[in-house]
Amino acid sequence: MKKLNERLSDVALRAVNHWGEKAQEDVAVGELAELIDVLMKRRRGQVGVEAVIDEIADAKFVIEQLSKIYGVDRVNQRLDYKIDRTSRIIDGEL
Ligand SMILES: [Mg+2]
Image (cartoon, rainbow, N blue to C red):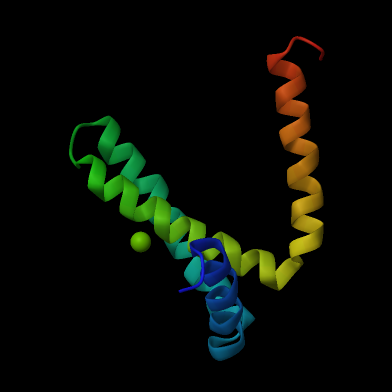
């Protein structure tokens, strides 16, 4: 069986190709809103940890699809920059 990240990448691309960029962008908006909603509910003690984990998984899946739509290499390039910047802030270099 393929590793999780490889399956995530493969099926994310298949989902975009199968349902289309517009539809999957709409799905992403919905799922990311669900993550925000569950985090606010968690803050108020209205949901358990499992509900948050479920929405994090949904969010990761749609973020991967958005990356396929807008360009994995370009997203990773910005991610690399942001990771490095955050690391340097933590280390007191910025
Ligand atoms: Mg969801």
